[in-house]
Length: 407
Image (cartoon, rainbow, N blue to C red; front, side, top):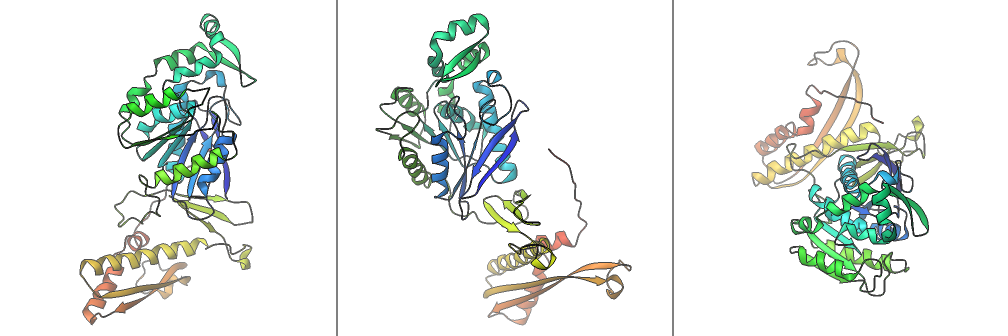
């Protein structure tokens, strides 16, 4: 199971530490996970659920909120609202580098935060809460004997799960101002509420309030026998199994189809060194992940296609797809298209129709095999259509590449 660690910039400008757990095979969907109050991305429940979801083809992003785990910043300066904003930032990062999350999952206070953030993540189709409070202010009962001191002094150290944390008056004011149920009413996404009837940290009444406020489609699952943190060995696996089965109804977990034409919204292609060898790279676009490399003859390991192989593959795929679309539209009896391509360098002086006369030029040889019961005119027209594929037009037109540096 690929296990990638990286950072992204939170709403406060701090670098937040994240982990993306991906399946060994194709990625069917992306999920975003929000952990419990003061926990962290590596809390057992988060890790176990993320790992279990990868077995179902769902890649899961989890990260440490400000001042927790390996993330920068001061926990005392964070609020419920800032956590919600960071969840939106995390979704933005997935959208920009891979694909936006289709599934949102939140545990405990993270569940409340996920509900609050869901309306700002348009691509999300399914939302899951696990032991979530219906009112974010519920979290203050964990340090209820210090609330008056916090209001009086502005900031006080409290003990949570045996660890010291500083809580500010701003945090109390922020959770008190939340109207989470109003947001749940306007969720307009499939909702799965999961809660243990014996949860002694967040009572089952919270699940009832969330479920009643939400509109259909909505589902409730009792996590009977589980504790609030899902510390039981089988509890997280059970939750992940339920999420995977339930999400099938609302999220298209099949491999997404390629865009039918160049007018469709483009997806980012992200290329990153693996550092496993001299040239090896991971290439990620949407839910698809592959390797790029160079042949052994030039110092690579030949673990994936080379850069020019990808260029040729793009042209070949586009050529075949464009011809297929035309044939289907015209009801032609086209059985199969096979495109074979090679790239080489030639002397400009050897190209009579080229404008450039000096130096070397790139040349792509494209051989197209057309199978089917087609007459000469139909075959001729299909060959003309091949030159109209969007990638062909891109490669033969002026291309502007804008390069920027980022941290």
